[in-house]
Length: 353
DNA sequence: CAGTCGTGGCT
DNA sequence: TAGCCAAGACT
Image 1: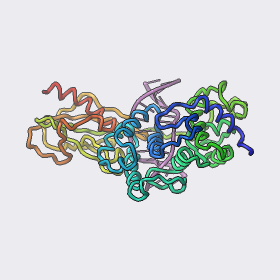
Image 2: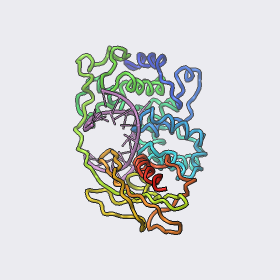
Image 3: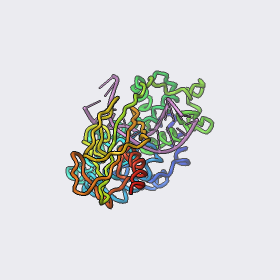
């Protein structure tokens, strides 16, 4: 049987250097017949979308401890899942995670589909994740193309067309290299290669199993690939966040609408975020503006939030939001920008008490 | 298709 | 430091 060019070299490298990851069945165990748990593969792949391995590991451990299988996750209250996801970002992933778990649990008998086509289209599963689950969990010979694969392919084949225009060419190259044998190991091998050797800057070509066939290396342009279209500048937006503490210690929080930024997450009531926000206090109080703003960088804008704090008597009703008892409040349930606001407000509230 | 959608680590 | 980047999906 004619193996795909390069597959043998990278699989041999993977057998010796595969990263040990909590969701992974390593090459040795896989060869011994151990199958990955599709639930854990799915959960890890969703968490890893645009997110580093280091950031994911702790979340993965907590999620699997709380919810060991897809039925358990399907039964979880969405608010609890959102709270556990807080800090990981891209919160539509968490909402879709619950939706997908409920579809699998209630409409598919608790069993993940094995086919890429059936996986793709489930909430939160797109072209990459569908192919990755099919390959890793079920050893389907799917073409798995993520950012690592794009970088590795652009270099091995010296593809100088900038992304995203180069995507079709890159996919064709990836398809030509994907082997029929051990497709799950192969997919993870290329991702490990991209994460540890064929890194974005200063790749370690000297120890790369694909050094010999690498066209970019031969041309000395490996560090300049893949090329990417120029990015747009990131504007600054301003806003005002209000942290109200009731006499019993309860804090006024507001759940954000499902659509849009930080959708479905808890946060402090506040103004719109724009060039010149209008004050929008959620209740009448003696608001004290803190001297320092909370700064946070999102993907497409930078936010500077003025923070106003107030102590309010019990019985006061808010126009917006709901008071959360102090005992039930966990800052870790908040998205990072809201946790930054709380960290600033906490100092002032401690002093006032 | 191009914009939206988070965050933390690294250089 | 300020920009770049990460196992993308969705509209």
